[in-house]
Length: 202
Image (cartoon, rainbow, N blue to C red; front, side, top):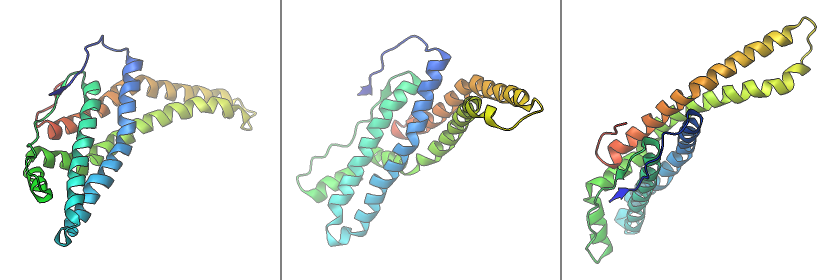
């Protein structure tokens, strides 16, 4: 099974930058959720496994890891512009809860999904910081035009400052597409490596 991706014309730089930025900026909240739900619940479930109540928690955590992985494959397909293969999970054939849990625990891809949930925050933080910095510089430069004039100035420094901010804003705006593209691919390649077991090529 693969994530279906409909081929399309290469988007314009502005549209591509917006798409890549959206992927990166929404990736960090998803990374936090993936770390909070599957990983934390699995640790709690493992600690309570002796008492018996931990088994359902562990099962829930591992299935949540698969859910986060499936959602990320859909997102990565848009970034890389190609279909993302879905792995074949080990079939859960046991009737009892311990048997089902054992079947999931023995599935290699499930652990790769959990590994992605546990460590995806690392590339997400790097990419998010980079893209957020670029957007902050662009929006900050644009907003300066709204309030910069109100600063006391009687020596013509406003025009110099306006020129400076306009130049900086233009520089960040022109470099946003390659920066956002690199950040998105950096994060997406990490996901593809763990969620499919294959290198990402673009």
